[in-house]
Image: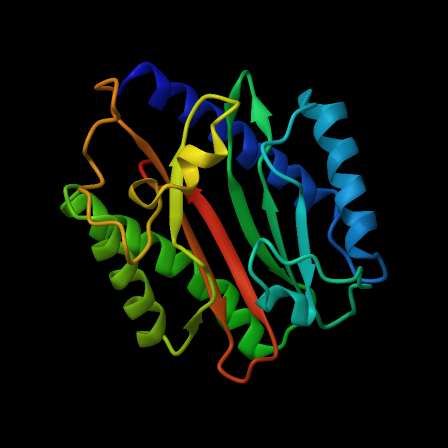
Length: 225
């Protein structure tokens, strides 16, 4: 593992601990607004993990807002007792971004619980598919992700299925280039090196949509970890 990959993996482990703290302290709970949960996460990350930089704005989505792509900014919403809530965070640890996303179900609605469970299942399956042939193109992996989601009965709600990740700050224009995203027009091998000859590191994103259109869910993590 190269130095950048090692540091990204370390940042990823710190992000996992942050999410564990979010869960054990029940930061995501009904009766709170999305904005209140976001503020609580900011203060927790700073107080317990020393995080004072974030690659992107903290995204907290609940109920029907979980259907929306990253760039949308819907009105703030109060989390209800039977809601589903997605978090998409980009905390920076020791100069490296940990792009990390998870979804939580407040109640016991079986469709929402199944979606939550399928997010992890699909992520693991799609990552395993990639690791068997890392020379596949971004378009090939995107096609596989969308197909795998459909096989489980879900729509795919992302504008793409992942992107490059690296030392902070990472150029947004570089990240938005087709060859650096897991999307239909990326015809480049994903294991091709960067222009400086260094290996590239990827984030995989799974954004599921319930076929009724009522809700969605999100899961994001390092592709190589």
